[in-house]
Image (cartoon, rainbow, N blue to C red; front, side, top):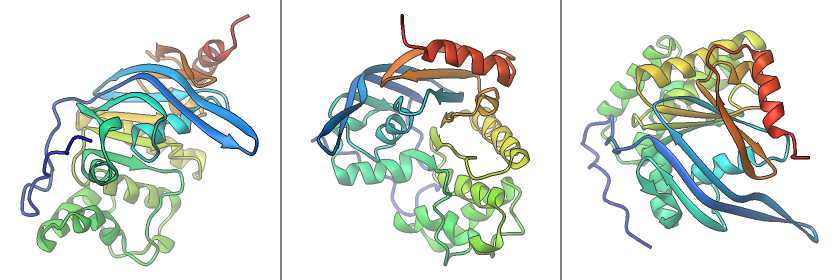
Length: 267
């Protein structure tokens, strides 16, 4: 497999390098799982183009392949075939070591379960990618402190996750995902464990991050209220792209209707 170019040295600018593209491009993507004696085609020759910057959603019925797609784009799982290009990089060609660096430095990932280390403070959780990358401690502290301040958590840096609310924990997770200032942020049902008011604030935050940081934020969601905060919605059906539409001021009800229309199997 091709070698990934060397990352910046530990003493380099902690904003990270800036890949030339915030475009996600998929061609002929396939992923099959075994479920007992059955073979399940989660993704079936999917083609997809998403151009950033902007806040985009992926929707579809349960079993349509939404989460599988995000895991393939994020390098958390390997495709059985097809091409995946994220931020100017063909990640389907990378070996495991290169994928680890890709996940750490080239993209950000936010999960429904937050995935914070319970024994670390908020500050230490945000610093973790830089520590794994060998950065200087003083630089790491400065970067993590800045990110927590920007996300309204400047006074919560020395609290462990169990002392934070769900919304605060998710903002810490977002700060960690932004540590190397990636051009692409993936979010997998990021508000699935939050109440409606906190969810709304998180969707607004992701929208603001996409706009102010000029990055692509791609969120998997089943919630029309979440998708209504996005600029464009991509709908999956049975492991393929069923269609896409611009939100353009739609409310959650109209988003739900349009997504359902696209997800409906052809007659």
